[in-house]
Length: 351
Image (cartoon, rainbow, N blue to C red; front, side, top):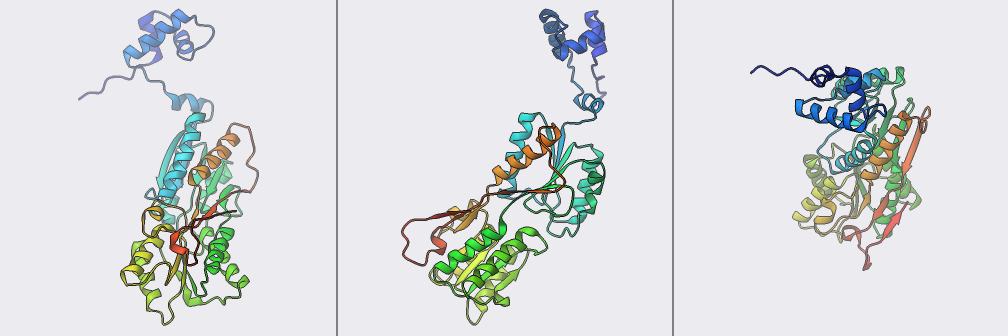
């Protein structure tokens, strides 16, 4: 079926027997066109099926009013909440979003970055893939002074702004809580330690152990992909140990929940035999039994702060600077999965 020709301002001008300049001004609410004429122009444009070419218009001003977003996966409650925060701010400021996922691959991340650059996005928001070892694939943005804001999984040393929580302090607080519940053999399940989030949480874990005079035991540190299969494997490894850990700090809630269920299925009691702390405050942490002690990671707030930082820079309201880091407060939420002592009500430890 043959497509109909795109309606232009010249077609509207011809129909109304006025100049194309008058049509353009009328569609853009210019003061030089009276209200009656403007109403006729708008109604005629709507009836003829006219669509404003915002892309071409923005290009004339060297802007597309489009932001690119690259995340590791869309199948994540945390990422979904971050995107929700970004979208709220972007929509209010009149920016469109192009969202892509790297699927935890640096190769795919680089392809996405090139596509975003070619689509002339005004700025870029990124959470790095699991295996990204360097960020040279963003050099085209850095070289053109196109602002890049990294969040959660970040890269230091580039001309970019980073938005994070204090993962070291969060890991420290989670481990200290387990110590306070009488745990002496505390294991830690985490992800790729080249990523700042996992490296910093592990450093906090080790610091809390050292401060509590508990020796760090290499066999209690389990590094994996943090997915369901890895969680089941980690649980099996923990239960096969001659002296099973009595405390467990897991770097995300989904992995913590799978581990906990596997441990319970094997006949152990949580938290009596092993106290468990997760991370992110995902929905799953609140619906399993027992509910999981976790670190609240304010995803939507992270999204709004990230988007505001980028858009304020683009609008000339603030400058991102050469390299800067914005740290958002997180919170330890204590629930039944870690309460080995007689504590009746849950507590919150903010930091």
